[in-house]
Image (cartoon, rainbow, N blue to C red; front, top):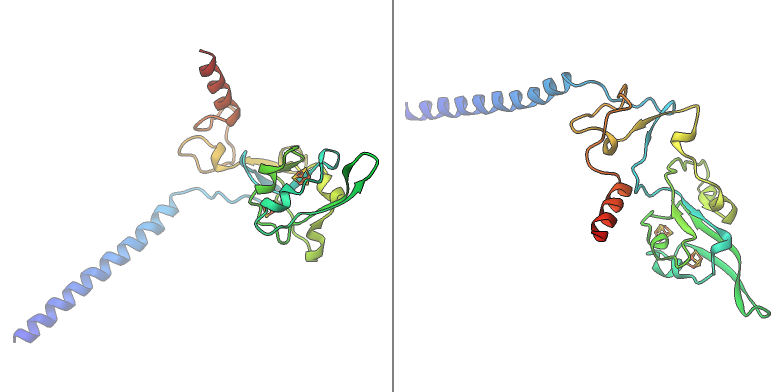
Length: 198
Ligand code: SF4
Ligand code: SF4
């Protein structure tokens, strides 16, 4: 009799647990049913990358002094700096520069440490290619001005989460006047410089 009662108790406990887990699962489902779809209709719509997005690197050939700091700080020694020593000027002369974006991890070290600021991270993220060798950008490809979502007349730019007002998750149909939470980096710098002057 006692064994039977124990079995009934265990069964009741397991039934209760199962009902609880099913309820939790359905709770998540019902919560999502109340939300609006936030699908971005790529490639007709594209999200504006956030300010510090680390996309394709831009390179300015004329500013480079062939110091190879970018190679030394790169975790995989990736940038290829090809230079000759110019005996007349007694300076290094850059011949060729390349970065293979099929290998680059977009850590930004090279950009951070370049003494002449000839490298910069852009907001370009569409680097897909059929052949991985096409991702090895030479100095001409690296010098190309970056693609900007906001400059493309064929694309509707949508604000990313970082730009949306607090609590808003849908970037569609937001009025122009809707303000994002927090300050933009330039406003923070402005505030700090004002604070230092006072
Ligand atoms: S660190 Fe800058 S200046 Fe030096 S080789 Fe690299 S890109 Fe050129
Ligand atoms: S972003 Fe990082 S991995 Fe890519 S080239 Fe620069 S230092 Fe190397």
